[in-house]
Length: 61
Image 1: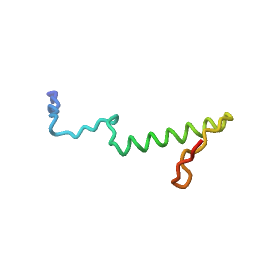
Image 2: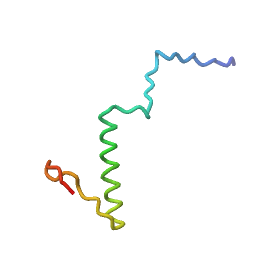
Image 3: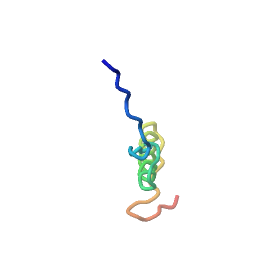
Image 4: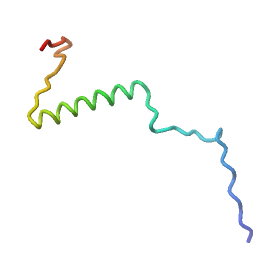
């Protein structure tokens, strides 16, 4: 029984998406999520970083 060789893969036939390439919108969302998590972690450990904006108004410290 002859062994069949697999077809060659052509780059233009496949849609490769690099998982590490993010759109600016995804980057912004991840950055805000990271900030929220950091604030929560600091609050759990007793540090109050406080919000910089409350109801859309910048808080002066």
